[in-house]
Structures are given as C-alpha cells and as structure tokens.
Image (cartoon, rainbow, N blue to C red; front, top):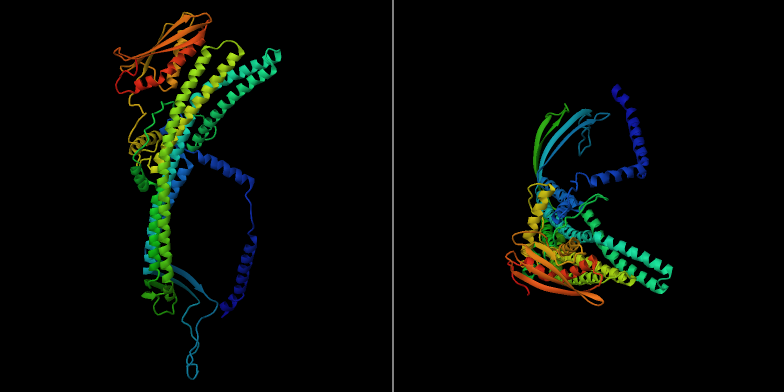
Length: 630
C-alpha cells in the first residue's frame, strides 16, 4: 500500500503542471510581423532563383531561339509544369487510398489503484463475490488490424478517376499557356526587330532635325526669318520628329516585353538576328476544316471534356454513397497483463451499416446531377461557339493585316521616293532643307509603319494558329539545351503551319542575289557612295546583294542633259539574268540643280531603284527568270 499512497500526491501535481503549461501556451501566441531583414532576404533569394541556371545570351537571337528561351525559362510556363507535376503526385496519393488499411497500435497503461469489482444478484441484490481484479496497474498493449471498407474503396476509386482527369485538365491548361507564350513572343519579336533595324537611321534623322532647329533659331534671332515664319518652321520640324518618336517608342517597348517573356534579367543586353522577313501566306480558305480542327484541338474545349467526365464520375460517387457499407477486418493483439489467460490473440469480423435517411435524398441527387450535366453541355456549347467565332475573326484579321501590310509597303516606297527626290533637288536654302527633313521624317514614319504592319500581320498569323489550337512544341525533345529546343520548335512550327496555311502566296520559293553595278556617272560624283546608297535601298527592301549562278545583274546607267536653270537627269535601270537575257528595262527622269552633286545623284538613284522595286522582287522570287516588262 505504501507505493500506492506515495503516488497519490504526484498525480495532482502532474495535473497542475500540465494545466499551467497549457494555459501559458494559449496566451503566448501573438501576431508577429515580418522584419525588414526577412523581407530583404526573401527579395534577394527570389531574384537569384528567378534567373538561376539560365544559359547566357552569346549570339543574336532568332525567333526560334526566343521561343525556346521563353518555353524553358518563362516563369508562368514553369508554374504550369509544376502544377502538372503536383496533379500527378495527387493522383498517386489517390491511388493509395484504394488499398486496405493496416492500423497498428502500441501503448503503455498505468493507474494509481487496482481496477476490478464485485458481483451482486439481479433479483436478491446479494453480493456473491469478494472484490477482485484481473488487470495489472502497469501493462503494455499492442495490436495490428487490417481492415477493408468496400464502400470506401469504391469512393476512393472514383476519386482517383477524377484526379486522373484533373491531371489531363492541368495539362490542357499548360498547353494553353504554351500557345499564348508562343503568340506573345512572335508579336514582340517582330516589333522589336523592326525597331532595331531602323534605330540607327532614326538617330541620324533626329540629329539632323536638331541641327535644323538650331539653325532656324539662329536665323530667327539674327532677323533673317520673320518670327512667325521661323516658329512655323520649328513647329513643322518638331511635329515631324514627334511622329517618328511615337512610332519608335511604340516598337522599342517590344524589346522589353520580349526580354520579360524570355525571363532575362533586367538590363541584359541582347540583339535580334536580322533575318530576312519571310513572305506572308495566303489567307486560308478552308474555314470549315479549320473550325473542325479547332473543335478537336483547342485546350479549352478539351478541358471542358475532362470536366464533363469528372462530373459524370461525381454522379456515380453520389449514387455509390447510398449503398450499404460492408467492412471486413482482422488482426492480432498483445497485452502484457499477467492476469489474462491469453496474452496473444487473433480476431476478425465483418460489419454492415447503412444510413437509411440518405435514401430520402435520391430525388434531390438525381435532379442535381441532371442539372450539372446540362450546365456542362451548355458551357461547352457556348465555348464552342466562341471558338468558332475566334477562328473566323482571326482569319479575317489576318486578311486585313496582309492588306494593310501591302498598303504600308507601297506607302513606304512612295515616301522614300519623295524623300529621295526632295534630297536630289534640295539647295542650301532653309525652306529647301526644311522640306527635305520633313519628307525624310515622313519616310521614316512610313518605314516604321511598314515594320509595324508586318509585325501585326505576323501576330495575326499566329492568332490563326492559336485559334485552331495548333501545338507548336513537340511532345518529346532529345535534349533540354536551347539549340536542341529551338531546332525542335522550328520543325514543329513548320509542321503545324502546314496544317492551317496550305497555300503560300507571297512567300518566295527562290531568293536570287542581286549583282549591282552603276555606270555613266560624272567624274565629280562619288560612284561608291551612289552604289552603297542603292545597295542599302535594296537590302532595306529585303533583297540580297551578292554573286552566284542564279544572280540577277542590275545596272543603273546615269545620263544628263544640261538646261537653262536645271539639269535633266535620267537613270536607265536594266535587269539581266546570268545568260545575258534582258528581263527589265525602265527609265526614271527628273530634274537636278545645275550644280550636280553626289548627294543629288544619290537621292535620284534611290528614287529610280524604288520605282522598279516591285518588278525586281518578282524577278528575284520567280521560279524561272522571265521578262516582266520591256
């Protein structure tokens, strides 16, 4: 009895300590805001992780390279990949829920006195046994039970099927993000490339306009120009530069957008590969086929298909939950209690249970499931109508974008010719310089508009692919390095585009180089300057200079007839093939000041070249050299 009495004071003491600890813990939890150092460390760690492990930019970036970088390093796409991996992990967990449950238990039991009791008669209430116990005060317990709940197995099976379809749904969302990234990269790339091509010329024009502004202010202060006329000149020059700056800034922002899509760190310098612009495909005419492809391939519609399957399984789950629950179990046990006759034993059993009140919910469950399926069908049909509309609208937008680009090209050439003619006839008078700068600025705006219209056409081209749901990323790639990904994307792009754009109109199948020559120049005119300016006009209009077995020989011959107040100048443009067959002959006439200079001859040569640019393009892209005009 002494040990028992000694333990009695310890029990209230232990209970008091436990109660004190519990109450102290309840009052110790208070809001604790993040410290400034913790926020700074988090920001630094995030910045390091955002750009960690990326391959550096070591060469000009092509369109395929930009797409490869975006798909490998873009954080939004990486997030979708992680969500897909998480969904697959949840599927593995759901499959484990279908296994039987094996529960193990081990414990230690102590009490301060003996358990036990007596027996009394039910009728006479007479005590028949003296107090006794069959349990030790201290003993150990252990058991292991294997149970299988049939109803829980069925519900777990349906939950696993739903999770499997959720994996497919997550994958379709990943496909949608991928398609949107490819579309955004295509749009930003061509706008940024257009700005990059014209940036140098824009700066030169800005410097010339700034010099003209200063000259105008000096003339105004010296009294050479009336104040109103001087201010009008300045206003005209500023208006011209404003137009150029608006176009330049609009397109230069695309480079920052492209850097963000590729997940390049802010301030990272890179250049875009100045590849030749590809021709624009003909507008698709097989709209019925495109609509069918869109209904089959769009990620949003496939996601709706999987949601319908998930809802159908949900219906089965609710019906299954109405069935009786059958539970099978078996296991082994152990108790160290020495008063037990058997310290080890095995046990098993079966139980059947059912909630009868759930049967009353059958009509409500049936109505809910029917309504759910109708909602799924209505949502899918509404989305299908939106998809079909997007296909039609995207094709129409591409058609308009192609037409706008054709107009922009023609406008740019006309404005370039106007600028060339203005430079050719300009004098040292202020009004003449102002007109030259004004036409030059207008020409630059037109060239920006041409580049912008081509980028818009490429964007509309990509939106047609996006509206159909074409996957532009192959399922399997041999390696994860950027060159391999870029090569795979390039091949996948070509395959996907062939499914949509079956006819090609403007895209040249042949790209003949141009062998340029200039003749007939007066001795005081710099022939290399003239040839360089004409070559720059040709390369700026997407022609290639060079020699080769299929090269076209383009010769510009200059001649002039002096007059009383001006010189009548003429450029004869001749195009021949390698066999010497004359394919094109065309003359360009204009008037120059009596004092013929290299600047005026260069400007007139540029105008003459631009006047035959369409014909040279057709000859350079023709499958066979054939006469266009004589």
